[in-house]
Image 1 (tube, rainbow, N blue to C red):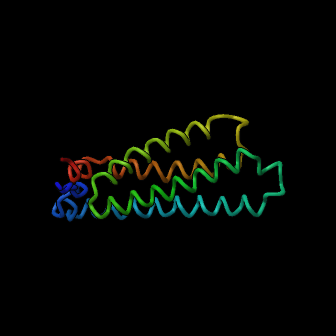
Image 2: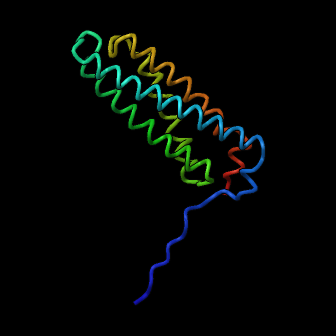
Image 3: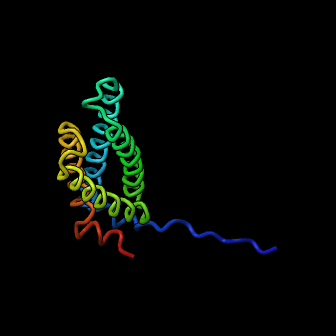
Length: 147
Protein backbone atom coordinates (compact mmCIF):
# COMPACT_ATOMS: atom_id res chain seq x y z
CA UNK A 1 0.00 0.00 0.00
CA UNK A 2 1.49 3.31 -1.04
CA UNK A 3 1.49 6.00 1.57
CA UNK A 4 0.24 9.40 0.67
CA UNK A 5 2.69 12.23 1.31
CA UNK A 6 1.39 15.58 2.34
CA UNK A 7 3.39 18.73 2.03
CA UNK A 8 3.39 21.19 4.90
CA UNK A 9 1.74 24.54 4.38
CA UNK A 10 4.01 27.00 2.65
CA UNK A 11 5.67 29.35 5.09
CA UNK A 12 7.72 32.47 4.71
CA UNK A 13 11.34 31.97 5.73
CA UNK A 14 11.91 33.15 9.30
CA UNK A 15 14.61 35.59 8.21
CA UNK A 16 12.04 37.31 5.94
CA UNK A 17 9.79 37.96 8.92
CA UNK A 18 12.49 39.12 11.32
CA UNK A 19 13.01 42.52 9.71
CA UNK A 20 11.89 45.30 12.09
CA UNK A 21 9.51 46.84 9.52
CA UNK A 22 7.86 43.47 8.90
CA UNK A 23 7.52 42.89 12.64
CA UNK A 24 5.99 46.36 13.05
CA UNK A 25 3.55 45.72 10.18
CA UNK A 26 2.56 42.36 11.69
CA UNK A 27 1.98 43.92 15.13
CA UNK A 28 -0.07 46.73 13.60
CA UNK A 29 -2.10 44.24 11.59
CA UNK A 30 -2.88 42.12 14.64
CA UNK A 31 -3.89 45.20 16.65
CA UNK A 32 -6.13 46.55 13.89
CA UNK A 33 -7.80 43.17 13.45
CA UNK A 34 -8.24 42.85 17.23
CA UNK A 35 -9.96 46.26 17.27
CA UNK A 36 -12.15 45.11 14.37
CA UNK A 37 -13.13 41.97 16.31
CA UNK A 38 -13.82 43.97 19.47
CA UNK A 39 -15.94 46.53 17.66
CA UNK A 40 -17.85 43.83 15.78
CA UNK A 41 -18.57 41.77 18.89
CA UNK A 42 -19.50 44.93 20.81
CA UNK A 43 -21.91 45.93 18.09
CA UNK A 44 -23.56 42.51 18.09
CA UNK A 45 -23.86 42.74 21.88
CA UNK A 46 -25.55 46.14 21.51
CA UNK A 47 -27.91 44.68 18.92
CA UNK A 48 -28.84 41.90 21.35
CA UNK A 49 -29.46 44.40 24.16
CA UNK A 50 -31.53 46.66 21.88
CA UNK A 51 -33.37 43.84 20.10
CA UNK A 52 -36.80 45.17 21.10
CA UNK A 53 -36.13 48.56 19.50
CA UNK A 54 -37.32 47.63 16.01
CA UNK A 55 -36.67 51.07 14.59
CA UNK A 56 -32.90 50.75 15.16
CA UNK A 57 -32.46 46.96 15.14
CA UNK A 58 -33.93 45.60 11.93
CA UNK A 59 -33.65 42.16 10.42
CA UNK A 60 -30.93 43.46 8.11
CA UNK A 61 -28.98 44.71 11.15
CA UNK A 62 -29.11 41.25 12.74
CA UNK A 63 -27.85 39.60 9.57
CA UNK A 64 -25.10 42.15 8.92
CA UNK A 65 -23.74 42.21 12.48
CA UNK A 66 -23.69 38.41 12.64
CA UNK A 67 -21.82 38.18 9.35
CA UNK A 68 -19.34 40.85 10.44
CA UNK A 69 -18.56 39.04 13.69
CA UNK A 70 -17.92 35.79 11.80
CA UNK A 71 -15.76 37.59 9.23
CA UNK A 72 -13.79 39.39 11.93
CA UNK A 73 -13.03 36.13 13.72
CA UNK A 74 -11.86 34.56 10.46
CA UNK A 75 -9.70 37.60 9.80
CA UNK A 76 -8.18 37.26 13.28
CA UNK A 77 -7.30 33.67 12.42
CA UNK A 78 -5.71 34.81 9.15
CA UNK A 79 -3.73 37.54 10.95
CA UNK A 80 -2.44 35.05 13.52
CA UNK A 81 -1.39 32.63 10.79
CA UNK A 82 0.28 35.43 8.88
CA UNK A 83 2.25 36.44 11.98
CA UNK A 84 3.45 32.83 12.23
CA UNK A 85 4.64 33.03 8.61
CA UNK A 86 1.92 31.01 6.88
CA UNK A 87 1.71 32.07 3.25
CA UNK A 88 -1.86 30.90 2.77
CA UNK A 89 -3.01 32.88 5.79
CA UNK A 90 -1.24 35.92 4.38
CA UNK A 91 -3.01 35.52 1.04
CA UNK A 92 -6.37 35.03 2.77
CA UNK A 93 -5.77 38.10 4.93
CA UNK A 94 -4.89 40.21 1.88
CA UNK A 95 -7.96 39.08 -0.07
CA UNK A 96 -10.49 39.15 2.76
CA UNK A 97 -9.42 42.56 4.09
CA UNK A 98 -9.63 44.13 0.63
CA UNK A 99 -13.00 42.48 -0.05
CA UNK A 100 -14.40 43.63 3.30
CA UNK A 101 -13.26 47.22 2.70
CA UNK A 102 -15.06 47.17 -0.66
CA UNK A 103 -18.22 45.66 0.87
CA UNK A 104 -18.19 48.16 3.72
CA UNK A 105 -17.79 51.06 1.28
CA UNK A 106 -20.93 49.91 -0.52
CA UNK A 107 -22.87 49.51 2.75
CA UNK A 108 -21.85 52.96 3.97
CA UNK A 109 -22.71 54.55 0.62
CA UNK A 110 -26.14 52.96 0.14
CA UNK A 111 -28.85 55.08 1.73
CA UNK A 112 -31.74 53.46 3.57
CA UNK A 113 -30.50 49.86 3.74
CA UNK A 114 -29.12 50.16 7.27
CA UNK A 115 -29.68 52.67 10.08
CA UNK A 116 -27.21 55.56 10.31
CA UNK A 117 -25.67 54.21 13.51
CA UNK A 118 -24.73 50.91 11.84
CA UNK A 119 -23.36 52.67 8.78
CA UNK A 120 -21.19 54.79 11.11
CA UNK A 121 -19.96 51.65 12.90
CA UNK A 122 -19.22 50.05 9.55
CA UNK A 123 -17.28 53.14 8.48
CA UNK A 124 -15.05 52.74 11.55
CA UNK A 125 -14.62 49.03 10.70
CA UNK A 126 -13.71 50.05 7.16
CA UNK A 127 -11.03 52.43 8.42
CA UNK A 128 -9.56 49.70 10.63
CA UNK A 129 -9.50 47.29 7.71
CA UNK A 130 -8.05 49.91 5.39
CA UNK A 131 -5.11 50.02 7.79
CA UNK A 132 -4.82 46.23 7.47
CA UNK A 133 -4.95 46.47 3.66
CA UNK A 134 -2.18 49.06 3.66
CA UNK A 135 -0.01 47.08 6.09
CA UNK A 136 -0.27 43.71 4.38
CA UNK A 137 0.10 45.05 0.85
CA UNK A 138 3.29 46.97 1.49
CA UNK A 139 6.30 46.15 -0.67
CA UNK A 140 8.32 44.62 2.18
CA UNK A 141 5.44 42.46 3.38
CA UNK A 142 4.71 41.18 -0.12
CA UNK A 143 8.37 40.36 -0.67
CA UNK A 144 8.58 38.57 2.70
CA UNK A 145 5.84 36.20 1.56
CA UNK A 146 6.91 35.96 -2.09
CA UNK A 147 7.45 32.43 -3.34
